[in-house]
Amino acid sequence: MNDDPKISVRDFDFFYGAAKVLHGISLDIPARKVTALIGPSGCGKSTFIRSINRMNDIITDARGKGTILIDGTDVYGSDTDVVELRRRVGMVFQKSNPFPKSIYDNVAYGLRIGGMRNKRQLDDIIERSLTRAALWHEVKDRLHASALALSGGQQQRLCIARALAVDPEILLMDEPASALDPIATSKIEELIYELKDNYTIVIVTHNMQQAARVSDRTAFFMLGRLVEEGDKNTIFTNPKEKMTEDYVTGRFG
View (tube, one colour):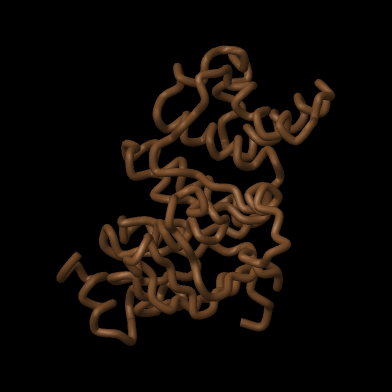
C-alpha cells in the first residue's frame, strides 16, 4: 500500500496482570477501509481493538507494551489526551448499550459533554448522525421517546449514530451484529459499507461470511497472535498459512 496507514501497530504485547494475552502484534490498518479481525473466541481480537482507543485502561492491572500509532502519533505516549483519543476513535460494542434517555439525548450525549449547548447546532448534528447511521427516517417523529423502546437492530444503529456525532476518524466495532437477527445484521453490514467512505473501520467478527462481505482487509488472530493478514480475497481464497486455511474453511474454530 502506498498510502501511509491510519493505524500502525508494532510489536504490541498486552497483559492482564501476569497473563500475556497479545504477543508481538504488528499490523498496518489503512485509512477509509474496513479491516476485519477474525479468529476463535478468546484469541485476543477484542483486547486488541480496545487497546487502540485505550479502553483497556479501565481494567486494573492491564497494560500494553509496544507501539500503536494513529497518524504517526503514539497512542500510549505520555502526552496523549485519552478523552480526545476516544473522541477520535469511536467504539460500538457487541451488545447495544443505549442510555435510558431519549433517542435525541443519546446522540447528543457526547456533544453536550464536549460543551455544545446551541440547540440548532445540536439538532443539525443529531439529524446528520442519525441519517449516517441509516436511522433518521425510522425515528425522526419520535426523537424524544425512550431509546430503550427501539428494536435491537435500531438500538445498535443508534449507538453507531452516538459514536458518529462527535465526529471520529476511526470506528471500532466489536461484534456489532452478533446479537441481531439476519435482517438487522444486513442493515448494519450495509451501513459499514457506506461509512467507510468517511471513516477508518476496524470490525471484530466471528462470522466469516460477514468478514468476507464487509472487509477490504482481513487479519486472522489465534491464541493472542496475528497469524496472517492481507487483502480479504487472499485470506479467504489463497491464504499463506495452513492454520488460516483450516480456520476459514471451517476445519476448526
